[in-house]
Amino acid sequence: MGYKVAVVGATGNVGREMLQVLSERGFPIDEIAAVASERSAGREVSFGDDEVLKVQDLENFDFSGFDIALFSPGGEVSAVHAPRAAKAGCVVIDNTSHFRMDPDVPLVVPEVNADAVAGYTKRNIIANPNCSTIQMVVALKPLHEEAKIKRVVVATYQSVSGAGNAAMDELFEQTKAIYVNDPLEPKEFTKQIAFNVIPHIQDFMDDGSTKEEWKMVAETKKILDPKIMITATCARVPVFVGHSEAVNIEFENPITAQRAREILRESPGIMLVDTREDGGYITPVEATGEYATYVSRVREDPTVENGLNIWVVADNLRKGAALNSVQIAEVLVNRHLSNVVPEAASTA
Image (cartoon, rainbow, N blue to C red; front, top):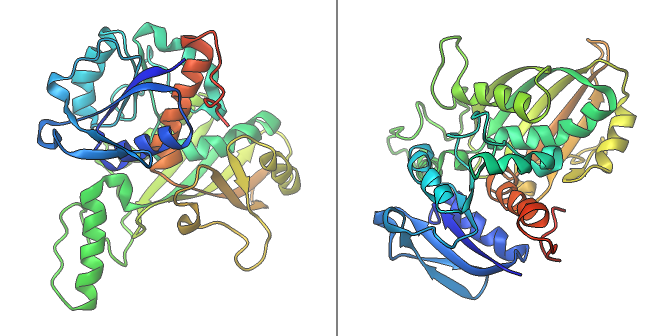
């Protein structure tokens, strides 16, 4: 049994990855539609190795008869068109931040809280979490089950692809300009991004945190456990694809680094690479294009009782966005939209 699927925002970084991941994982599709804004209508995008789709105008797109829509067009656009698609009977999996904290919309990372997908019936919408949140909670979940997490302190090192195509272009152009001594003019970022680190992602809030930092706190509590105390510092780094996180965890119960490695090695969605030697860890370059959330540098923190430090890396366009959305769709069709489990639609 196949499904009619629409990918909204199909010409953006995440939309193109959604199409690629749907094809790679053999999602059961009878019909696929690529949808984007009016200015992108008529363009062509690839679906798999052989199929080319002509982009359709979102404003006039009829979602009637479609089973699932994967949305990544920006929050303001999703606010208007996701409810329209949901009303037409299409289940929306939205990658923007607009619906994440809505109590009637499940916020899902399949390795962490797949059962929450069942809540889609309230609004016919499921929210995909923030990219930095997703990879962190995948790593935290099995450790939380073992020793109960009390507090998390995280610093992120986030790639420019998280800010879109124009941000990637800016890093490329600024890097070239530095080598030929051309003037630099930041446009997508508040300061020069090439050969620099910017401790600022999204708008500042009244308490001095940025919206990105607030998202990590609020979303982790909704997905994993509202009792966990979390503080985050999010920085943009001159990397094209792949987010990295240094995560300090304080537990209620004892847990050793060795036990943590044993747990992480067997946990879904995680690849443990931690050999404690030169190169025995994963960097964003190696995670790009991969499905896994990588964990390295697992070690005990002697400054607190029951503390660990871990290093977490993932492709933010894949596990941080497109892959997670497709995995949600796989849970949806396996558990809720059909009595028959399509062989290709696993959440592995």
